[in-house]
Image (tube, rainbow, N blue to C red):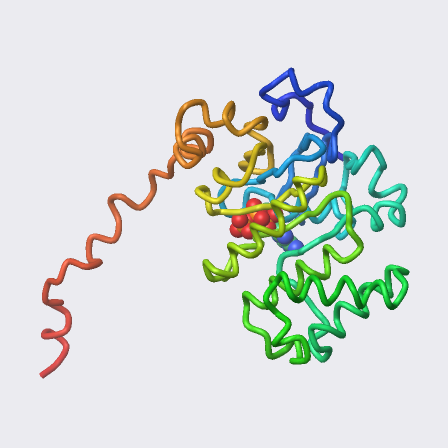
Length: 281
Ligand SMILES: Nc1ncnc2c1ncn2[C@@H]1O[C@H](COP(=O)(O)OP(=O)(O)OP(=O)(O)O)[C@@H](O)[C@H]1O
């Protein structure tokens, strides 16, 4: 087993040391065959943060989040949420976290309301309390009118919203969201943002992955940047940005791609293809 040295993901600010950590991984490592997906990640998220996990396609964000939320067993390293080891105490952890995973597999043949009732009761919340919370969440997510519709008939944005409602139902201390705004219209995105801001304002923690830098910049007070399976910068967003936009900082940190500039000369040239005339009689 390979175990990479810690240090490259150290928080940019030593001043955060006194603040309790919601999430902490040490040397988290995952390999799929020859492909090292996560190469020794030391992720830190202070409690109460609205934290963004960013990086290019294939950087290892989903794999990291899957290992922290108990969905994928790490090959090496450890993950703690609220100081509890995820893989040693999975039952304790599952009560403390809410997850909106990538791909979002839901029980398609339940209605939105039934899905929430089922999830809440699975978590041991009394039925009348689940019903009360479910109605409130449906209302806030603007899903009351679709509450009796089957989830299979929900749109992408509606699925994200019902998935988020299900993840919030047991009032977790830490919420993990993989690309929560992907495919969500701006109005629904605003609703999600409002719910999440209300949630973090009360001291809970959100960790979400996203490719939308403007959104991360607007929402997050903490950011972790991944590239090639490692954390390449991490800390309060102002420090990671260092006077640039987050997008500029990201390009700088991961290196702008230089491929493709010479290729694709044929694309959009508008020239008459010579081969078309030569092959036809
Ligand atoms: N189940 C798997 N089997 C094989 N390779 C995998 C698997 N899951 C992820 N990988 C590989 O691991 C690397 C990291 O993938 P991951 O999905 O974690 O990246 P990501 O940062 O979430 O990317 P994106 O932004 O595109 O969603 C990629 O090279 C990917 O091809």
